[in-house]
Image (cartoon, rainbow, N blue to C red; front, side, top):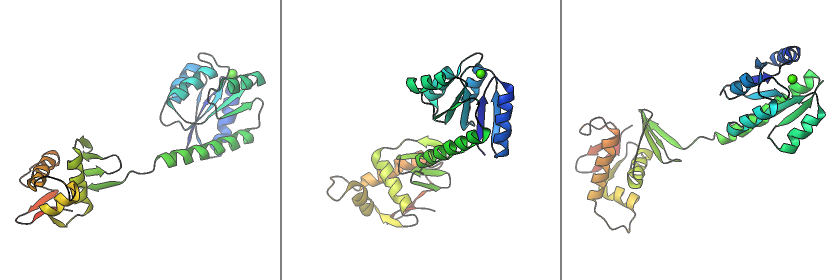
Amino acid sequence: MSKILIVEDEESIAELEKDYLELSGFDVVIETDGSAGEERAMADDVDLVILDVMLPGTDGFEILKSIRRSREIPVIMVSAKKDDIDKIRGLGLGADDYVTKPFSPSELIARVKAHLTRYDRLRGAAAVRNDEIEIRGLKIDRTARRVYLNGEEKFFTNKEFDLLAFLAEHPNRVYTKEELFKNIWGLDSVGEIATVTVHVKKIREKIEDDSSRPRYIETIWGVGYRFKI
Ligand code: CA
């Protein structure tokens, strides 16, 4: 459920807006003082703000500026004076919409819904999931090239990361050191097969509690390695 913050010092107006919004299924909080409203607007659970311009404490312009410094949530400005609306537009403070008093509650609800829909779409687009592999507390984020063990980030060199990700992408499959070397370092690379052993050791130090009894990368004696699933 979306949470709407109404910052409005005229309580009858605030209550009217609240009633209509609640009838439409929104969760609503009211602040009648500008400074309290500013603070409340920064809370993570607020999804949209209906912001009056003339307020005791901090005025609507200042609150809008301060919201825009840290949050992208929709803000609908409300004022009795058309001049205020022109001023908000002129200053480019980043309001999403403007409503002059008196307004019809149903018009306000329609705008709230439209802005929340648009905002949810933007948020959804930004929240496209990273390409991750997660096995028994070990999370390998291939998009960000980061590794977490039980939520704690572990730092890997490029080759360590490539080797771990390669093995985890092909779980339960046994690879020889030669195969791993070719896959990670490339056919033409100059180097020694022992490099693979060294890298596996370093990876284990970062993700295994007990390297002699590994939970993730298993040694298959005489053959190579396998990522256990
Ligand atoms: Ca007012």
